[in-house]
Length: 112
Length: 114
Image (cartoon, rainbow over all chains, first blue to last red; front, side):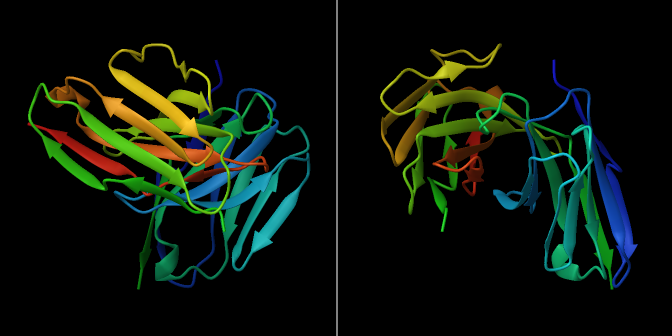
C-alpha cells in the first residue's frame, strides 16, 4: 500500500526565517499535492506537481518534485505568521486525482 | 473559483440518531466527490469516493450501511451517518474534483455524538 512520510511532524521557526517540509513516497507518483489546513477547518489547495523535476512557486512558497517523482519539498521563504498551520502532502497514485493518500501533516508555528 | 461548501459546519446529536452532511461545489461541476474523516491531530482518511449517478466506492473498513453516500447531482453529495454513536464523533471533510486533476476541499463538519 502507498505510504507517505512527512517530516518534520512539527516545526517552530522565528518569523522571517526560511523553512522546508519534506514528503517522501514509497511509490512513484502520478501527482503530488500540497495543502494547508488550519485546525478545525478545511484544506486550502496550494500546489500540484506532476512532472519529475517540476518546481512551482506562489508568493513565498516553492514546491519541488524530484526526478523520480517520489519526493517533494515545500519551502517557505521569509516566513510570516500567516504561514502558520498544518501542511499536508497528498499523493496521487492512480492518476487524475482519483484517490489521494495523505501524509500525517507538518504543524508549523511561527514565533514573532 | 473552485469553492466547495459543507453544511452544517457543526452538529451535535444524540446517540442513535442519523445525521446528514451536505457537500456542494459552488462554482464548478464535480464529477467526483470524496468523503474523508479526520481524527484530532491526525491526517485525513479517505472513506469513500462518489461519482454522480452511481454508487459510491467505499474504502476497506468503512461500513457502507453506516455511512450512506448519495451523489444525486454534479454539485451535491450527501453523507448520512446512520444510528450515530459516540465513536462516530469526528471531523468529516468532503472534496470535489471537476475537470482538472485537483481536489478542492470543503471547510469540514464537526460531528459530536452524545
